[in-house]
Image (cartoon, rainbow, N blue to C red; front, side, top):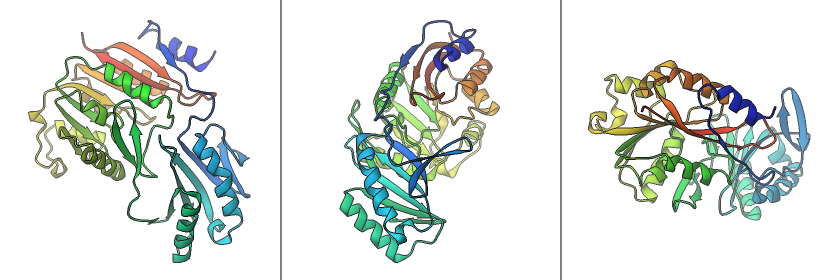
Length: 335
């Protein structure tokens, strides 16, 4: 039984209608890749096994092109190679590439200078990281463009960003199709604003929360660059949002009161661990829940606890073909 059939079977008691599956191309789809570095190779991990590679066909063409070039430079430069343990890649819709080199050593001035020389030679952006260090410290934003919505969006090398460039526009389109009779929206785990920024064109007001500082900075930059005036962001964890609704006052809200909002929808996109009991209790009070999940097991667990809501629609997005992973986008409502 494949992963799609297994998920449909596990969900059957809660939703028996047909579930549309959005398939990904088999290669050249990943715009975010992370590798260890060892033995002059990129390293992937499969459980306890190490897989040594020099190329990766799942990556976007721009990343595929740059991988052997940067690997050759690293392998032939003792300064860059010494105590390097991880190499990360990101690409955007313009096929620009961001490379992050992560070290088990302090960043000396020579390695900083050399890294930028390499970046210029390869026409890429390179960021260096070590314990409590990052270089460069300015202009670390990586710009992308949400073609379906004409929106500029920003990320840094350590922010979460959807990894499949083909399926992301379809996911955004599906989420936007779930909105009916909108007033105000609240979003938990908003990240850099992948969904918040496009949804701001539909809702009167949008309150978004995220605990990661870099993600909030990227989101706020996106709000500014796109001249969006109806999004208010707050660096709050999901549990702090629960406290907010229970009356706790946060200075990070900048005197914005939730009592001024008329929420018709809530959007949650939690990590693989899913929602906590306290967050489930909170979101159960909203009529319309847009739930995005990267873990079928925790998704089904949470849906069972949201027993006043019914699944109106659900779609699968095969973000990682040929693996057991899948992404779920769904709308739950109270009749």
